[in-house]
Length: 448
Ligand code: S3P
Image (cartoon, rainbow, N blue to C red; front, side, top):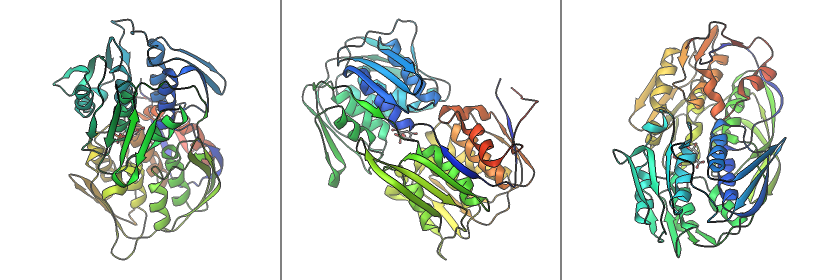
């Protein structure tokens, strides 16, 4: 049974919140802790269904994971400590592209075979981008049409490679770096633009021998170096916060304080764009934790506008706001000016084809949108009308259109809103706290 949600427009958001732990950081810390020598403790681990898929997979590989209250213990057994998952019970990643792509790097270095599979959306997402480098390193991987899950990974003794990934993808970069941990020698990976760099920072924290050459976006890692366990505190996820930030900026009289957020510059292009549009977002109490900047954000309702000629986002900024583009498109409907996004064709192969789902959803709400093969253009100050929106099983679409619903008069309905739990299980509850009872209404006629 999928859960539908109705949203009543015309409210404001007021309050102080914490959002769940960062999804990207949580995946990485769980995977690296599982191959470190000894027990790591993790606080603030993401509540996201995707990150729990990662925990399930490492448990199936024989790693003890103990969850008490706010802390998770992961009892790593070193680089050779995994046991094969008991076939035919596969490693099932659910909806999580990060789990399948990054864990495959580790599985490629094991001396056994693993089968990794996921839901229907995962089976549509391209895996050739990781199969190619892992094959060059010596693993044998079979996949549907050589590209799609389920993946059968025959691990091997890996050789180091010098790999240039054609797409700026942190999942691909991480997959190669994780495989590099097992290789005999130094593996290097470079990418066309810098994608999020949590893996590079975290590998250092675990004691890996890793170096980054910023000028060339090139990273090298020395293989066969044992990792030590860590005590890690995961900050809040700025990509989840983005939905609440949008609500606070767009709903008159809003004031919001979001505490303990990851503010890594490879993740905060969304905030920079909003600031360039005139948003009042105050960054406070910034500290460095595990080499990641963390702080609080104070957001106030703001009149947003572009320069006369509009704003174009393209090129190397795109990887640093890739997950925020659906909500940015919703914001674009409200600003004075025109926002154009190009070079974002990666959005077509996310949990849904996000250029299509965003365009269709906004058009259903009466917005004029130009859709390109690699982007969108939206002129602002458009009136949103309430509509019935299908999430297409995509968490960021469900949440972006919930915020759009808050801006529309009347009642918007999100079909399949429960997929928000993929990254932000507390989303509807938190929004109700911030907007007041009666804003989010569960549909009693919940449809299949
Ligand atoms: C992620 C990287 C991005 C992003 C995804 C999480 C990560 O994907 O869209 O939500 O944690 O490395 P790509 O690596 O495909 O760009």
